Amino acid sequence: QVQLVESGGGPVQAGGSLRLSCAVSRYTSSSYCMGWFRQARPGKQREGVAGIDSDGNTNYADSVKGRFTISRDNAKNTIYLQMNNLKPEDTAMYYCAADLDPYCTVSLRTDPYNHWGQGTQVTVSS
Image (tube, rainbow, N blue to C red; front, side, top):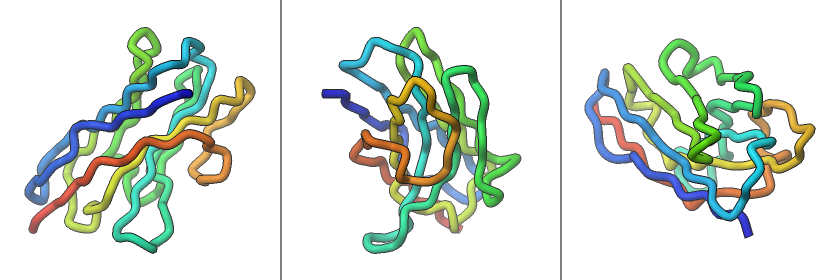
């Protein structure tokens, strides 16, 4: 069973930076798409933040363009989300997700993703 484990969240002041990591284990192929999502509070819809495919093509939500960067290290089976110039409205639980379809395309929708991590909390104070 594929496992995704996020790390790197925590408290930060507005204008600061954090880098989230998501380690993918128990899966040897690098032909999959990955995404970062966030949920501001329980019960609120999960929002797609950034996605990346196996070729490094990326897509970002308008709210984070120019501030967040998604990247991947296939050798380490790890993806990253570099978050700069953080704002209080970025406060949320952040989840990484994997779409293991080898023909996947980058998506910010939740439905293509069939494996999810447990999340890491990011709290931005003003």
